[in-house]
Length: 285
Ligand code: ADP
Ligand code: MG
Image (cartoon, rainbow, N blue to C red; front, side):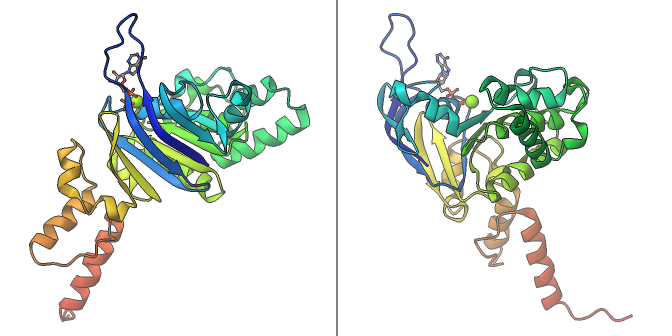
C-alpha cells in the first residue's frame, strides 16, 4: 500500500541549508489492510512522515509510493490524495460546517459527487463512527471525542484506502480516546489500512506492526511482541512501556513466567486470575 525508500526530508530555513533533517533515511512499507502504529518522542519526525505519505511534503531525497504512485509525480497527486485520508490532532480545526451531516458531505461535494451518492456516503460514514443519530446537530455542541469521530466520518466519506491518524486522541479525555481507538480498529477490520501516529504506548499494542521513531530515524520496529521484548531500549528512547508489559516484566523478575504475548491489562488480569485459581485450594465455606 505504502512504500518509503530512504526518505530524507529537510525543512528549509531561509538560506540556511545546514539544518538537521526531520527525516534522515527512513525506509518502510505498509501492507494493504494492516494496522501500523508509529510512536516516538516529540520532534522525532512522525508528522513529517505522515505528511510525506499524502504528498503534503515531498522528499528532499528518496521516494514515497502510494499504491505504486510516486508522490513526487505531479500528475499522480490526485491519485495519491484520493487514496490517503488524514485525521489530525485537533477536531476543531477539521470541522467546517455548522451541521454534522454537512460537514461529512463537504469533501465529496467538493469532488462533485452526485447528491444520491453523497447521501449514501453520509449514512455509511456516520454509521461507521456511530454518530448517525447526531447528524442534525451542531458540531460545537459535541464532546471532543464525538467531534473527532465526525472528522473521521468526513474522511471516510472520501472513500480512502488508507487513513493516517496523526495523534487523533491527544486532545481527548480517556473515554473519547477509547472510542476513537475502537473506531480505528473497526475501520481496519472493514479493510481500511490504518497508520496511527500516537504518543500513547497503550494504543499500539493491538497493531500488526509498531514503528518507533527517534531523531528522524526508525529506532525499532516489528510486531508488538517483538518490539516489547526490548523494554530497556524503549525506555532509553524516552518512551513508557504499556502498563501490562511493565507489570509482566516485574512478575518475571519474581519468577512468574508470564507469556510474552500478554501485552494488555485485560489479558494480564485474566492470566493472573487463572494462575491464582490453579494454585489455590478451593475455598472452604
Ligand atoms: P513529531 O510529529 O514526531 O513531533 P515533526 O515531524 O513534527 O515531529 O518534526 C520533526 C522535526 O522537524 C522537529 O525537529 C521539528 O522541529 C521540525 N519541524 C517540523 N515542522 C517544521 C516546520 N514547519 N518548519 C521547520 N521545522 C519543522
Ligand atoms: Mg507530530
